[in-house]
Amino acid sequence: MKLRLLLFSVIIPGLVMTGCRQAIKPVVEAPVFSTPNAKLVATVYNSGFKDAHDTYNGLSSASDGKIYYVLSSQLIDVAGQMYSFDPKTGTIEHLGDLTEICGEKDMKVVSQGKSHVNFIESNGKLYFATHLGYYSIIDGIEKAGIPVNGYKAYRGGHILAFDMKTKTFEDLGIVHDNEGIITMNMDTRRGLIYGLTWPTGYLFRYDVTKKELKNTGPFTGKGELGIGPDFRVICRSIVIDPEDGTVYLTNAEGQIKYLKVGKDVVETVQGDDLNKDYFGNYDVSTAGSMAYNWRQAFWYAPTKKIYGIHGNSGYLFCFDPAISSVDVLERLTSIPSKLIGMNDQFSYGYLGFKLGPDGHTIYYLTGGPIYENGRRVKGATSTRKGEAKGLEDLHLVTYDILTEKYLDHGAVFYPDGQRPMYVNSIAIGNDGTVYTLARVTENGKTRTDLISFNEPFKK
Image (cartoon, rainbow, N blue to C red):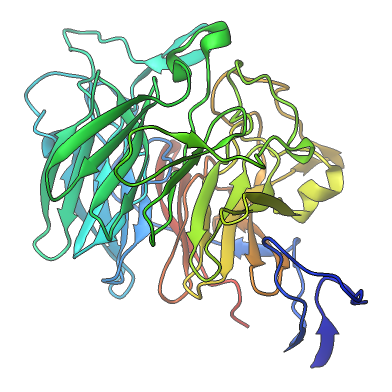
């Protein structure tokens, strides 16, 4: 045990810390160090869905102690499937087929292949939404899948509620113009759900009490439906101030946008933005990155600030709405990535970014370079869609908001030595166990499924 000062060894007289930095104070703690060479061994589960494909978000822990998740499908006629995992019993329960839940079982339309959002719990129910998983690649860019074999076009994403006690679903409505729902959040105090559609990027609001859906219009140009200068990648994370209900999100230019309760016009934060040199340089009309958008972000109630990750660069930042100020805090990539000075391989960055159950530790699942015969394995130099440009390790990184301590806990492997791939989700159980959804190859066949590994701070 020793006494140490965090951040600075000298306190400059008259220096006032503002924005997102914590006040400097002595902290007595046992020394804890990064272990980037450590191997975390994951437990692999089998949900019984052989067609499960890459899943984005679609994973949350709930107050009943269970882990809820959706496994996605990229097939025109196979829907995403919802499950729960009970850590106490180690059992998985299949809860529903997304197409059937949405009342589209016999319509022969493009399936409800995904849930691209996390679950939001309110009054014993989990609120979430659906998205399409069937795509067509046109000019190297993912577009809504063109129907074949007598199928009709995708009808649109649905807003859904699941009652955890009765295990029943409620279909709250379908969004406009055959669009999927790419991100969603909920103001649980006011019963208001906000979301963005794909590919156009309509911003919508749904009033749970009044059962009213309001489309406020395109949020960012023509979104990912746009061509050339009209293209804009759509924000994947919406943040809500629970006190006043203000909604925050970003655009490709890095502007931080906000929508006040009861308003239909989105405004722009004045004074600061996410267009930072540290984040990189992007042509906002070109596909293949999230540009200056935040990748994932959350509201931190103790200080009334937003913590987020810029996906492509891996930089953690904090936005203080009270003073319209952004502080860039730390590069949360793995230590091996920091050492080589290169971005990780997933073209959009990672969605596995969440505040842990202690209320102040951020958990982040990110990448790390792989070496063969002493040389780093390189990936593609560019892409026009969201994908992994090459192989890499999966690292767990944590960051303590109170002490500003960064830790790389090492790389995650399966018992047979394989690496989890295409990881873009995270949930932390009540006991600190980390869960995610990843590609699993067994008996020569690959699927996406639930995996977990032990709480990283256990001695």
